Image (cartoon, rainbow, N blue to C red; front, side, top):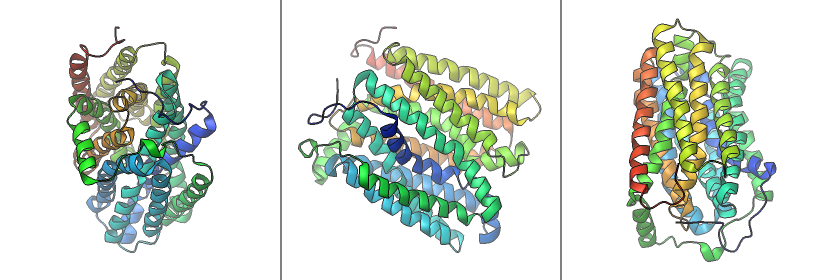
Length: 411
């Protein structure tokens, strides 16, 4: 299916200001993960919680995030983009306030669920907004701009979180997050445009929703394209979920030093997104994704060799992760646009379901794979290799299914 901007709105020129606004909305989800990871030991001491209980504060957040991903897009397709963003910012602020004043681990679980239920709206709706307003190479360039700006947040989040932890205590992390959310709520109320005209909206009737969900989920190409970037995400999210064990336990980094992982990781995503934007209109989607997988392959092999044969050394062990995220940043914008173009009249729902797949898998990684594989550097490297192999396999299957119907994909 071909697709362009939503009828009723003229295409708008790209700008870094608009990209920054959309990226700031998408940052809430990663901020709620990356900022508080350095505080795990401190939270455990104050709330008398075991390491497994602390890990569950991440898992319940991820599962709530993934579940609500099923609905953010459908609601924005029915009610418009702007109301969904504003409503979820308000709920996220409430959940963050609860985390800041939580008196026990059970309360922290509860308010982390509330954060998770609302944090994903920014990511889902921003993708739909981009596709509402832009088409073709311009959409890919805008998606890349948003990804580049978005990358600044997760890179800074663990640094800011570590500093707040050591200077003011772990609760200050959530107070800072609360202040940021209130600021975003005010800014979006004033300047965020509505990009979906009323004539293009879908009814919220259960039969209509069921029909639309069935149409998306019943399309084999959707499942393949949604899983490709999700598995790449899991390959490096494994290191985020295991960051306390990976950095502090295996590499001997202090709680001030989480930037050793997050700055290279997010820098890689930004570099990959920049390259994706530069290649838009110059290379076919197939060639861009092929180049991304070549970079992933180099990273996986290097990670296995370094983890298995070199003595632990922070810069050396993080280098393959940097390379990996460059490849993932190359692949993600292109695959996301291919996915959204499968259903041009249901982009919000499609983005929702893509997010659900990605973050449901992320929840599984955080709750099971990360604690299991974080026992050694080689086991983490093999986990990355396994997720990547699965992603490559599904991309090859997608290509074989799409070859007969897609045009303009000759290498």
